[in-house]
Image: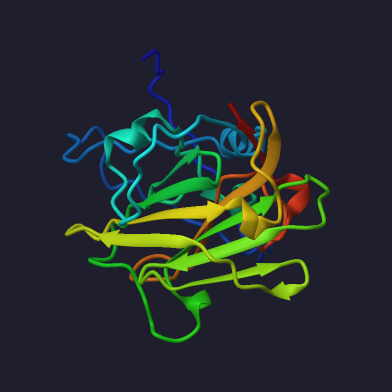
Length: 248
Protein backbone atom coordinates (compact mmCIF):
# COMPACT_ATOMS: atom_id res chain seq x y z
CA UNK A 1 0.00 0.00 0.00
CA UNK A 2 1.28 3.47 -1.02
CA UNK A 3 4.45 1.97 -2.53
CA UNK A 4 6.05 4.39 -5.00
CA UNK A 5 7.39 1.62 -7.24
CA UNK A 6 11.05 2.31 -6.53
CA UNK A 7 13.63 -0.26 -5.42
CA UNK A 8 16.96 0.89 -4.00
CA UNK A 9 20.02 -1.35 -4.17
CA UNK A 10 23.26 -0.96 -2.26
CA UNK A 11 26.39 -2.95 -3.16
CA UNK A 12 29.67 -2.89 -1.28
CA UNK A 13 33.12 -4.45 -1.51
CA UNK A 14 36.12 -4.65 0.79
CA UNK A 15 38.38 -4.56 -2.28
CA UNK A 16 38.29 -1.01 -3.63
CA UNK A 17 40.53 0.23 -6.44
CA UNK A 18 40.23 2.71 -9.29
CA UNK A 19 40.14 -0.02 -11.92
CA UNK A 20 37.50 -2.20 -10.27
CA UNK A 21 33.86 -2.13 -11.29
CA UNK A 22 30.76 -4.00 -10.17
CA UNK A 23 28.13 -4.77 -12.77
CA UNK A 24 24.42 -5.21 -12.03
CA UNK A 25 22.25 -6.93 -14.61
CA UNK A 26 18.44 -6.84 -14.28
CA UNK A 27 16.97 -9.94 -15.88
CA UNK A 28 13.28 -9.11 -15.58
CA UNK A 29 10.87 -6.65 -14.04
CA UNK A 30 7.16 -6.80 -13.31
CA UNK A 31 7.04 -10.58 -13.62
CA UNK A 32 4.03 -12.15 -11.98
CA UNK A 33 4.64 -13.37 -8.44
CA UNK A 34 4.42 -17.17 -8.41
CA UNK A 35 4.98 -17.83 -4.72
CA UNK A 36 3.91 -16.54 -1.36
CA UNK A 37 5.36 -13.13 -0.49
CA UNK A 38 8.01 -13.09 2.22
CA UNK A 39 7.78 -10.64 5.09
CA UNK A 40 10.73 -9.69 7.26
CA UNK A 41 10.92 -8.26 10.76
CA UNK A 42 13.02 -5.29 11.77
CA UNK A 43 15.85 -6.70 13.95
CA UNK A 44 15.38 -3.74 16.30
CA UNK A 45 11.78 -4.82 16.88
CA UNK A 46 12.95 -8.35 17.73
CA UNK A 47 15.48 -6.99 20.22
CA UNK A 48 12.91 -4.67 21.81
CA UNK A 49 10.53 -7.62 22.25
CA UNK A 50 13.33 -9.78 23.62
CA UNK A 51 14.42 -7.23 26.22
CA UNK A 52 10.90 -6.72 27.54
CA UNK A 53 10.76 -7.83 31.22
CA UNK A 54 9.02 -11.18 31.68
CA UNK A 55 6.44 -11.98 34.35
CA UNK A 56 4.25 -15.06 34.70
CA UNK A 57 1.29 -15.00 37.08
CA UNK A 58 0.87 -18.64 38.09
CA UNK A 59 -2.56 -19.80 39.32
CA UNK A 60 -3.28 -22.66 41.69
CA UNK A 61 -3.85 -26.07 40.18
CA UNK A 62 -7.43 -27.35 40.07
CA UNK A 63 -6.07 -30.73 41.18
CA UNK A 64 -5.87 -34.13 39.53
CA UNK A 65 -2.86 -33.43 37.31
CA UNK A 66 -1.38 -36.57 35.76
CA UNK A 67 2.29 -36.42 34.80
CA UNK A 68 2.41 -38.50 31.62
CA UNK A 69 3.86 -36.14 28.98
CA UNK A 70 0.95 -34.75 26.94
CA UNK A 71 -0.08 -31.32 28.22
CA UNK A 72 -3.33 -30.86 26.32
CA UNK A 73 -5.52 -31.80 29.27
CA UNK A 74 -8.17 -29.43 30.51
CA UNK A 75 -6.37 -28.37 33.70
CA UNK A 76 -3.45 -26.81 31.78
CA UNK A 77 -5.77 -24.39 30.00
CA UNK A 78 -6.19 -22.45 33.23
CA UNK A 79 -2.46 -22.24 33.87
CA UNK A 80 0.04 -19.51 33.10
CA UNK A 81 0.90 -19.98 29.42
CA UNK A 82 3.64 -18.30 27.40
CA UNK A 83 5.17 -18.75 23.97
CA UNK A 84 7.43 -15.67 24.23
CA UNK A 85 10.57 -17.62 23.42
CA UNK A 86 13.50 -16.19 21.47
CA UNK A 87 16.98 -17.23 20.44
CA UNK A 88 19.34 -16.39 23.27
CA UNK A 89 20.54 -12.77 23.46
CA UNK A 90 17.79 -11.66 21.09
CA UNK A 91 19.32 -13.22 17.97
CA UNK A 92 15.84 -13.79 16.50
CA UNK A 93 13.12 -16.38 16.77
CA UNK A 94 13.41 -20.07 16.09
CA UNK A 95 11.08 -21.64 13.53
CA UNK A 96 10.48 -24.31 16.20
CA UNK A 97 7.83 -22.86 18.49
CA UNK A 98 8.12 -23.42 22.24
CA UNK A 99 5.27 -23.06 24.74
CA UNK A 100 5.45 -23.35 28.54
CA UNK A 101 2.63 -23.78 31.06
CA UNK A 102 2.78 -23.45 34.86
CA UNK A 103 0.53 -24.26 37.84
CA UNK A 104 1.13 -24.86 41.55
CA UNK A 105 -0.41 -26.37 44.67
CA UNK A 106 0.56 -26.67 48.32
CA UNK A 107 3.41 -29.11 47.65
CA UNK A 108 4.51 -28.79 44.02
CA UNK A 109 5.28 -26.49 41.13
CA UNK A 110 3.93 -27.98 37.88
CA UNK A 111 5.61 -27.09 34.57
CA UNK A 112 4.85 -28.32 31.05
CA UNK A 113 6.66 -27.62 27.77
CA UNK A 114 5.43 -28.12 24.21
CA UNK A 115 8.38 -28.16 21.80
CA UNK A 116 7.34 -28.03 18.15
CA UNK A 117 9.86 -29.50 15.73
CA UNK A 118 9.27 -28.72 12.03
CA UNK A 119 12.66 -30.02 10.83
CA UNK A 120 12.94 -33.47 12.45
CA UNK A 121 10.53 -36.37 12.51
CA UNK A 122 11.45 -37.00 16.15
CA UNK A 123 13.57 -35.22 18.75
CA UNK A 124 17.28 -35.96 18.92
CA UNK A 125 18.49 -38.25 21.72
CA UNK A 126 22.03 -39.44 21.08
CA UNK A 127 22.53 -41.73 24.06
CA UNK A 128 25.56 -39.89 25.43
CA UNK A 129 25.75 -36.64 27.33
CA UNK A 130 22.34 -35.07 27.86
CA UNK A 131 23.82 -31.72 26.79
CA UNK A 132 23.82 -32.84 23.15
CA UNK A 133 20.15 -33.92 23.10
CA UNK A 134 16.90 -32.06 22.59
CA UNK A 135 16.31 -30.78 26.13
CA UNK A 136 14.32 -28.34 28.19
CA UNK A 137 15.75 -26.56 31.22
CA UNK A 138 14.14 -24.92 34.25
CA UNK A 139 16.21 -22.57 36.40
CA UNK A 140 14.69 -21.43 39.72
CA UNK A 141 16.05 -18.75 42.05
CA UNK A 142 13.40 -19.03 44.76
CA UNK A 143 14.87 -16.46 47.16
CA UNK A 144 15.77 -14.00 44.38
CA UNK A 145 19.32 -13.44 45.62
CA UNK A 146 20.84 -13.78 42.15
CA UNK A 147 23.37 -16.32 43.43
CA UNK A 148 21.64 -19.54 44.50
CA UNK A 149 19.54 -21.59 42.12
CA UNK A 150 18.24 -25.00 41.11
CA UNK A 151 18.71 -26.13 37.50
CA UNK A 152 16.69 -29.05 36.12
CA UNK A 153 17.31 -30.52 32.65
CA UNK A 154 15.02 -33.08 30.98
CA UNK A 155 15.71 -34.59 27.55
CA UNK A 156 13.27 -36.05 25.05
CA UNK A 157 13.85 -39.56 26.43
CA UNK A 158 12.77 -38.39 29.92
CA UNK A 159 16.26 -38.59 31.40
CA UNK A 160 16.94 -35.73 33.77
CA UNK A 161 19.83 -34.22 35.70
CA UNK A 162 19.91 -31.33 38.14
CA UNK A 163 22.37 -28.86 39.63
CA UNK A 164 22.67 -25.97 42.01
CA UNK A 165 25.31 -23.25 42.31
CA UNK A 166 27.72 -25.74 43.95
CA UNK A 167 27.46 -28.42 41.27
CA UNK A 168 25.44 -31.60 40.64
CA UNK A 169 22.54 -32.12 43.03
CA UNK A 170 19.93 -34.80 42.47
CA UNK A 171 16.41 -33.35 42.63
CA UNK A 172 13.59 -35.82 43.09
CA UNK A 173 11.13 -34.68 40.45
CA UNK A 174 8.44 -36.55 38.57
CA UNK A 175 8.44 -36.05 34.80
CA UNK A 176 6.84 -37.50 31.69
CA UNK A 177 7.65 -37.06 28.00
CA UNK A 178 5.43 -37.61 24.97
CA UNK A 179 6.42 -37.44 21.28
CA UNK A 180 3.67 -37.18 18.69
CA UNK A 181 3.70 -38.23 15.05
CA UNK A 182 4.80 -34.78 13.82
CA UNK A 183 7.97 -34.72 15.91
CA UNK A 184 6.55 -32.31 18.48
CA UNK A 185 7.59 -33.39 21.95
CA UNK A 186 6.08 -32.49 25.29
CA UNK A 187 7.30 -32.57 28.87
CA UNK A 188 5.34 -32.45 32.12
CA UNK A 189 7.02 -32.26 35.51
CA UNK A 190 6.32 -31.72 39.18
CA UNK A 191 8.95 -30.06 41.36
CA UNK A 192 8.40 -30.50 45.12
CA UNK A 193 9.15 -27.39 47.17
CA UNK A 194 10.88 -29.64 49.70
CA UNK A 195 13.46 -30.52 47.04
CA UNK A 196 14.15 -26.82 46.54
CA UNK A 197 14.63 -26.26 50.26
CA UNK A 198 11.74 -23.81 50.51
CA UNK A 199 8.27 -23.84 52.02
CA UNK A 200 5.11 -23.56 49.94
CA UNK A 201 4.74 -20.11 48.38
CA UNK A 202 2.14 -17.70 49.67
CA UNK A 203 -0.28 -15.90 47.37
CA UNK A 204 1.55 -12.90 45.93
CA UNK A 205 5.01 -14.35 46.54
CA UNK A 206 7.50 -13.86 43.70
CA UNK A 207 10.30 -16.15 42.56
CA UNK A 208 12.82 -15.65 39.77
CA UNK A 209 12.76 -18.24 36.99
CA UNK A 210 14.18 -18.99 33.58
CA UNK A 211 12.66 -21.40 31.06
CA UNK A 212 14.96 -22.67 28.31
CA UNK A 213 15.17 -25.13 25.44
CA UNK A 214 18.26 -26.63 23.83
CA UNK A 215 17.78 -27.61 20.19
CA UNK A 216 20.73 -29.48 18.61
CA UNK A 217 21.72 -28.70 15.03
CA UNK A 218 20.01 -30.53 12.18
CA UNK A 219 19.50 -30.31 8.43
CA UNK A 220 19.35 -26.61 7.56
CA UNK A 221 19.76 -25.15 11.06
CA UNK A 222 22.44 -24.69 13.68
CA UNK A 223 22.29 -25.49 17.39
CA UNK A 224 19.85 -23.14 19.10
CA UNK A 225 19.58 -21.87 22.66
CA UNK A 226 15.93 -20.86 23.04
CA UNK A 227 14.99 -18.79 26.08
CA UNK A 228 12.00 -17.11 27.70
CA UNK A 229 13.85 -14.67 29.97
CA UNK A 230 15.99 -11.95 28.31
CA UNK A 231 19.34 -13.54 29.12
CA UNK A 232 22.49 -11.62 28.21
CA UNK A 233 25.16 -14.34 28.30
CA UNK A 234 26.04 -17.10 25.85
CA UNK A 235 24.83 -19.72 28.33
CA UNK A 236 21.72 -20.03 30.47
CA UNK A 237 23.46 -19.12 33.77
CA UNK A 238 22.46 -15.45 33.85
CA UNK A 239 20.50 -15.12 37.09
CA UNK A 240 20.44 -11.32 36.95
CA UNK A 241 18.12 -11.44 33.94
CA UNK A 242 15.72 -14.18 35.00
CA UNK A 243 12.01 -13.47 34.66
CA UNK A 244 9.51 -13.25 37.50
CA UNK A 245 6.99 -15.87 38.58
CA UNK A 246 4.18 -14.56 40.79
CA UNK A 247 2.02 -17.06 42.68
CA UNK A 248 -1.64 -16.05 42.59
